[in-house]
Amino acid sequence: MFNDFVIVGPESDPAGVRGVDSATEALTTIAEAEATFVSRGDNSGTHTTERNLWEAAGADPGGDWDQDIGTGMGEALNVANQQVAYAPSDRGTFTSRRSEVDLVVLVQSPIEGGPETLANPYGIMAVIPGVHDNANYDLSIAYVGWITSPGAQDAISNGLRVRQPWSDRLREELWSVVGSNGAPEAVTEALDLVGLSDKIHREARSLPGGEAQRVSFARALAYDPEYLLFDEPTSDFDARNADLIEDSVLEARDRGIGVAIATHDMQQAERIAEVGPAEQVFENPTDERTEKFVPGELVY
Image (cartoon, rainbow, N blue to C red):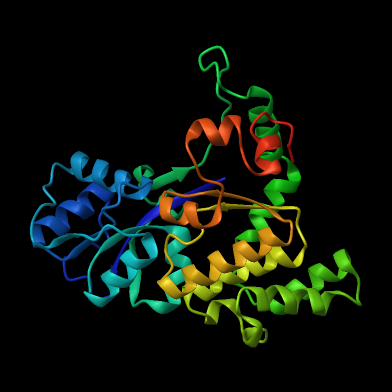
């Protein structure tokens, strides 16, 4: 599984980045021109990669033209668009926002013949129990087996198609899962839960970024899952979309769906998850599912 990084900017390319041979040369060109550059500035993986590239380029991004905005990728692209600026982006987020911004890819990744420094592979490994006494090795191996299984890999591949016309596709997929009598109701209920029932005849690619991502949530809900796994589900959302997703997560939880969320937003964790001192969560959790999950009894 992989993503990749690109450097985007205005079509007019005032710094003359288009056509350079490397990402470091692109950054050097931007710095020399003192062209407005938008950085996430949030210590994320993307931000770390960007800073490593600046270091490799030997350029100083500390001028007034360099703007660290301390937010997610989606908002960084919005700011770059508003200020006719350059920005690094992961390809997935830029593709999902492409219809909303007047930015173009100026430096490609290895996928499109660009420099290897913009590659962004994902990997998974189990923690060695001999080194970490508190590691749940059996659960780690079960998760590795699941994420690399054909079913999980197919789910990842299908998830990349959210920007395609989705209402008909979703109906077709659900038809074989819940039968012809239940499919329309399942779709409508899922879209209603995420506040998109009035958009059922719209294509996801025609929706704003937040709404398009809520389509992904609706799609998962329509299958009536036992568990939902989220990774920073609201990192690029505005307040309204974030609130709608959190309300939907709480509703799903109240329906008995298990929810696991990876997030840096501790306020969000406190609102929607079991939170407490580590000793309490791991040794005396209040939720039965947490009690089973921690020792590895609950494995899917």
